[in-house]
Image (tube, rainbow, N blue to C red):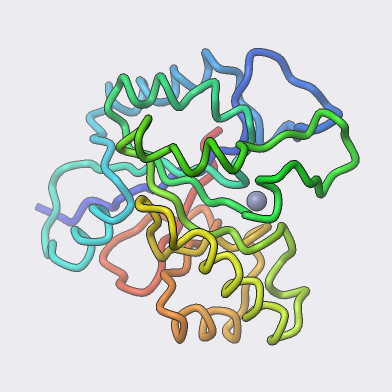
Length: 216
Ligand SMILES: [Zn+2]
């Protein structure tokens, strides 16, 4: 018997039609393809669990025979509305990594159509979707490595102050654009935040980091 890795997948936008004004090809899946990918993993024997459950298993399991997978979504796009009801029906947990700065309609791309979940939606997620948890993607969508140490600390703190009021908040931080270094990792650890990378790797029993793969 050998230890099975836990896979943590990340997606961004899911919709029926691609719109180049505010979507990126690599970050978008058609709704039916998204569902096929999820069902395909289930057919391969993967069981969907939440991110905190995955972390518990990584701390505890010395041998893990079952195949587990975790679903996460970055940025909090309004197109999540196309999949959250379906994921809920399927009883599939998902962690959303949000930038609180954009929940009031502000944009970081130049498209009128760019739209995120609203503050009201985010505050009510736990009622509508009990399997949804919320983590931090920073206050706004700026890479940690492009900020000064003070700016990075401030961004984490501001996001945490906002998000930790939500009953489904978990202290996990998904690096914006995936950019990170030893210093930013250290700041997260000091702050009690679990670092969530986008490095294409799978998770074995590492206690200090969550590795992710893009769902494609
Ligand atoms: Zn992002």
